[in-house]
Image 1 (cartoon, rainbow, N blue to C red):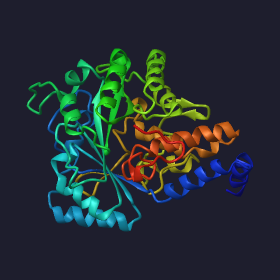
Image 2 (cartoon, rainbow, N blue to C red):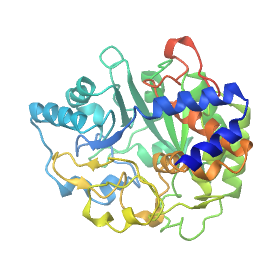
Image 3 (spheres, rainbow, N blue to C red):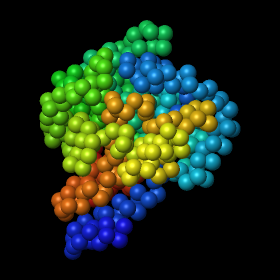
Image 4 (cartoon, one colour):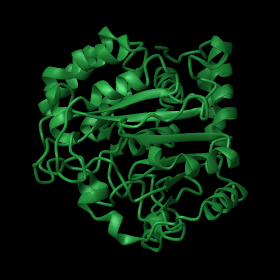
Length: 365
């Protein structure tokens, strides 16, 4: 650790602004300790390719329905050091009282939502709302406009845009694939015109079997994502380092996969060997099922060979600081990525709307 600190000091040298940015980021990062919570097994749509239902997570545990139990659980999590909760489902907006239980207990709350039902801005002004979007253009309705009954509908993206117009809490998490290449620019433009920002996720074209392991060619997709980022830098709020890592699954220091992914549940018994391999993990991170007793394998499906989850990729880059100390340029590249990441959360001091200012190096919509 002393050697790492000395190397950072050497790279920073007399660059006061760079040193201040690193110190500010370090101070904030130390306040963030994350947990993930499935707060319901229910959802008001059935997206094609949704890992939660394809791997029958809704059948694995019985959902806790006692609101008092949720409140006690959120407080217990806080007392164990968790300050930052990612609430997923199912669909979290179906149970705002459970969202409120975490808001009352912790300072930093985010939800992952399909956008069909709005989370009240009046009741939840500091909850980050991450709205899922598949493919763009006609692909979103094709893949997500499906009721639990199987009946299809249209206009899900339009509904989400209307619900969260000029809402600083909202960021659209746009899952791209090779099929989405023709729609990326228009989708990003529409979100920007709506007063929101865009983050990226990466999934295979629906119906392909484990395409990430089959080496799906992502060159065209990467080129288009970077082109659109260049054109809409204040809307597509993803750093180039992150985009390249997300789509290729690799960096100059390694390959993303089970042996390197830090977003595993630390108290799950399956990870005993993984925790000893020397690769960093998120301290104290667990992904909880809605029975409030079961700890899931990791932050997503547990199918590591075909996973390229955006939050897991970001976590991998964030905890890999030591691999960016070969030069000052490399250090600044990591810092730009980290600031850009944190700028997406309404509860972060890096968010453009916080105090009406922008932290050094971050981007604004």
